[in-house]
Image (cartoon, rainbow, N blue to C red; front, side, top):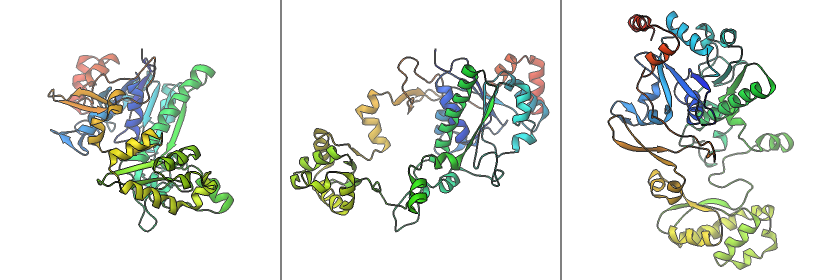
Length: 395
């Protein structure tokens, strides 16, 4: 038994935040029924690299889900979703606030159908406030939430991370909130409730000490490149053979071990450098010393030395590095699967690792509407009614 076995989730989301949230639930046993528009489906099916006519990203993001088509502008399509929600534990949606209400599928309408329902709502700015109705993608959440302002180098414009991190962070908060709401029902006998996740707030919640530092000292955190501001030394360096490594020696004992390992016993024994405040006051000097040592050695030699000294260090991994790394392989972080034409491929493993009830992948992202007839039959629709709905464009 997986930990979420028996939990039914209806997904009304597209692209990243909503679908990633329900993907997490599906990986741990929830039955996730993904509602998609007939003929089109989730736009993610066509995003980034395509294999044939389907995105490889889709096969990962929609794994373990059932695809059911429903035209939410047709009364029969809306009625089908309402019947599905009646038996659901969680609805996950990432429409702009107000859209589902216009379709008759808002919180008040669904709560009447299912008083115990948990509704996870992911949106750019949340369900309330003066900006609630405005569109907002992950990039906007990263900007408004503060992440972009501290990412990059001080002499250049802010930059983004290489993935849609704002959407993914929001998805994680949505999954946590949905499970907390279910737990409340189980333990406290509570009714259903709304889990309201705003993308900008999801990012903002990750911003460490940014708020109190500004409030107490008037300090505005800025872009600092690859270093950790106020925490020294932790930086990215380039090796003799042109590799990029990060070395994090910002713990007191770790710093001492690194200095001893590179032959700088004078710095290892310097009392001013025994704590972070002293090291941070001489950050430029320390980064020059470490950078010079790294530049004089190949990456493999540096990693051998740092490992022996128990100093955290790593190459900046590419996908190629991951595929060859024994740690990735030992932890089953590259799962083997097959595409619809039976071509083998690998996809990301399951996070987190549960010792007794681990998650897993039963199937990759389904074809559009693959489970429509099956799910409608389970809801009590007759074969003739299902045929009629196919004909009238409601599914």
